[in-house]
Image 1: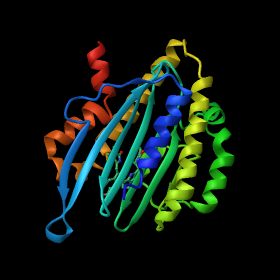
Image 2 (image 1 turned 135 degrees about the horizontal axis):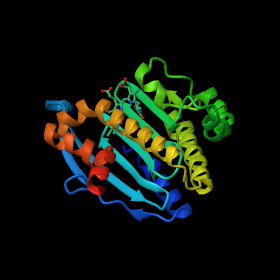
Image 3 (image 1 turned 90 degrees about the vertical axis):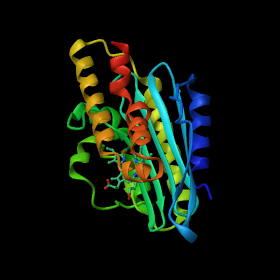
Image 4 (image 1 turned 120 degrees about the vertical axis):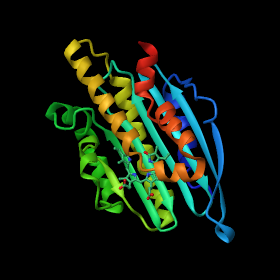
Length: 248
Ligand code: DBV
């Protein structure tokens, strides 16, 4: 069972069709990594693959895909835009554990408290969000410190049925991605220096937060060890700081 393969395939196909994609260099050792989870009869092989692209307006489009049979399936898909645009991040964290599913899909804002930013990037997706929320209700408790990184259109839900993931969650993932691509196509370069430094600051804050609080850290460390995991998080998954220091 590879629950999220169709999600990943769809995302890559759609982005390829609608944007001019180039490959994003994946550091050596991260493209494909095998590991073992559990013990004895419950032992399960786990394969983690990484996928990376970029385009003129998108600095990094990247996915981590974890396939661990019935024990674990994950697709973590994030788009980091170029620092000259005020776009939100596209963020999807899709997790299947033996106990059930955990789904997070959003256009994560740079400036969550800013009303005109919300009007530009959240309000247009609210009708779609409300439609999906009928079948994909709010998933409950959420880390408070993370709230500033989410939009009012944040789809956060914990379906118990895999069928719901294959149908409703898949449809939502596709629609959110399409809406994101529309934002990307419309986005114009920011030239105001104050706005540019605000964008940089917000991008750093987001990437640092996610690297520091990565909910997959425990799982990845158990599978592949501390050294590999920390390098994967800072050198690929949330690599903005590294890229900035390379550029300077
Ligand atoms: N999450 C990632 C990456 C993953 C990943 C890079 C490579 O950011 C997977 C894989 N997320 C993952 C796994 C779990 C979660 C959970 C394996 C289960 C962890 C466990 O149960 O042991 C949204 N993801 C979660 C949770 C939240 C999110 C709230 C529940 C656990 C928790 O409370 O921390 N996604 C998470 C989040 C942001 C986001 C906080 C953004 C700021 O986009």
